[in-house]
Every structure is written in structure tokens, then in C-alpha cells.
Length: 161
View 1 (cartoon, rainbow, N blue to C red):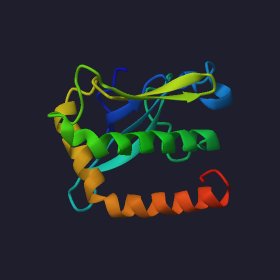
View 2 (view 1 turned 180 degrees about the horizontal axis):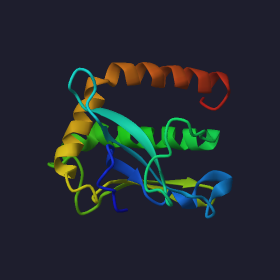
View 3 (view 1 turned 60 degrees about the vertical axis):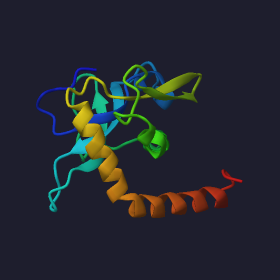
């Protein structure tokens, strides 16, 4: 995926085949990819992680006024969990990933698989992946609290044993 130069979102983890697994819209969607990446620095000067939906026609996120179908929100959650799993073991790699094998997961959905990979199209991936890992660490308490809440709620709904 070619990242537009004008974007403020620097992808680190990407599902660039998302159009093949986009729920009922699979194979006929304008959504090209989902990504997790670094966004502009926040008030305290640190970069923060944001999710982005990439549309084929516009090559940028559709913006905060767009509605996201529920399945796409859940797919972003799956992408987040896959990234968290990767980064829990990423210390084993000198570059926090294996440059020879940037795909970190393939998750079966609707008869296809959502590919999750380190975004090697990002020209600054070596620096950005370290900042991404640092941002995950800095926000681990907040992320963990939300994941525990989500787990409890999924248990109550009968999705987790």
C-alpha cells in the first residue's frame, strides 16, 4: 500500500487486504485497509497510537463524521489484539519484528483471512515501530483496564468461557 505523503497517520501495523474480509461488503467495499499507527503528538509531546480506515478512492481516513459498521469496529479490535500479542513478544527481535517475515498474523474471517503485518511501506518503520511499542507501554494500564472490561462483558454474553 502506498502511503500518501500528506497523511498525519504513520502506519505501523496494517491489514492491507481488508477489502477481502470486510463483512458483508467483502470484495465490493471501498475500504482498502485498516491500520494502527502513530498520529500527531498529543499535548504532552508524545506520539499516540490511532486506528485508521483507508479508503481506496480517497487514500485517506474518511474522517470523524463517518459511521463505522459494527463489524468494522470489531475488526479494528481484532487488529488491536493481534498487535498487542505481537508486541508482547517483540523484544525477541532486534527491530521489534522480523524484516524477512513482516506478516505477524492471519485471522480467518468470512472464508478468507485478514492479514496483519508490520507496514514495511512506511519509510520510517524502524523508528516508528519503536515509538509505537513505547506508546503501547506508556498506555498499558489504560489499555489493560479496557481489555479486562471487554473480557468481562464478553464472558457475560457467553462468548468467553
